[in-house]
Image (cartoon, rainbow, N blue to C red; front, side):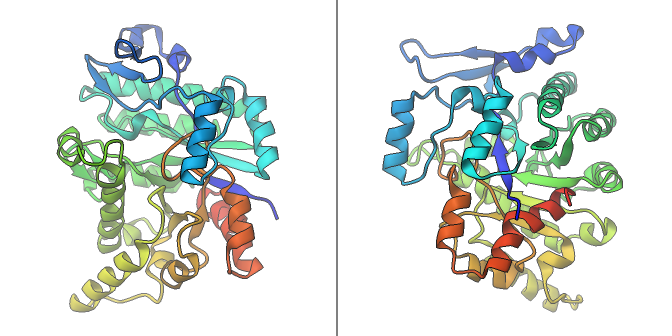
Length: 359
């Protein structure tokens, strides 16, 4: 059985922005670093520090992080940053991964509140990913980033990305002052459904005010309140909305928030369905075509009772160094899960193939 890594990443570099159109180069992001700190860098975009950039870690740093967390995070820099696509594919072979679906890193927060900047940066990023896909079209697929400050431009980007290996459209749980269930985004969902592309709700937060409010001084660097919690809330909002029925073929993925929250969300939604006198499907996730990425420390058999064994996928978070990262997650999952082999095969291949339209 083939293996699909449903959540892998690319790390943007200054070379990413070589794909800006000539007239947009005035919006080029720049990497800046605090004085005396050679490892920490930040993106300077549209006059502010924005987006996300991982620290520059040495092999020794990665080994120490792996030892401390018990999760493997050791990957070659040229592979993480996609400056050597063949090296990325070689590393996938080492890990027993046939296909990776690649997600962004920098767009975890809003990069600009100006539509012209949003359009320019999304267009450049999507062009960069299209060129990466062309170097390994059977091994690397990707989730495109739509410039949602301009819906017409976003629709153009979706169509172009579909022709160049994109299998999903990124939606952040919070987009400015809008939730993902806002009818403002219905044209995006209509086009994704028409093109047989999934909606990938990756942990993120594009509301700067909420990001500032939830950033904890007691847990520096934590993504829980900033990015994970809004992702869980957005899944509940989707379950309670008209969207799954309005777009009956559209598939949804909730990515990198683990899966332990699924029983809670499903139980909450069931209670509200019953209180409102709504038809209660046997499986809410299956009925709404919702998939969730699990981690090896999730109680997956328990989660499967609520999500269903056909709606769980797994990712390695390849390229990152955070609490979700486990480069050898596929191997660990195979060796430690009590699930039957048929269910494991679904999680590793059949489910992500269905989610991303790769069957």
